[in-house]
Image (tube, rainbow, N blue to C red):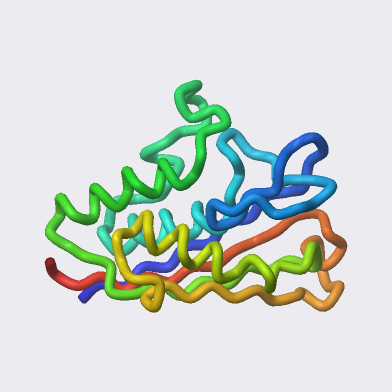
Amino acid sequence: MRVGIGFDLHPFGEGRPLILGGVKIPSEKGLEGHSDADCLTHALCDALLGALGKGDLGSHFPDTDPRYKGISSLLLLEEVVEMVRREGWEVENVDATIVAQGPRLAPYLSQMEERIARTLGVEPGRVNVKATSPEALGALGREEGIGALAVVLLRRG
């Protein structure tokens, strides 16, 4: 077994869609970033790469590479999952938390779980996504952005 942890944070920006876990969330503003800025999926990629001992998302998909401009983070996750499989591992389970003052995410969590599970090639019951509020504390509490934390457990395939 191997465990990995990932964290990602993006500031809000105007004129961009808000994508979390591959799901478009109705919002007046989205997250800034080179890709679609899906901080949940980025945190999960970092957790998987960490469990493999293979660095982080930026080392594999640098923001200086124009191929990744605006790319869906689920496509990046697919590539990371392929690395996991090539190394002889399988995803046992994922637990993730999104930290956001707003918008309200509860209605979208099951869709995120389903999209992530499908991309990982596991049943939805192995993926758990939660959302929590920072209770108006700090930059996230002032709605300057959204953060996400993910933990993954891998087992030998």
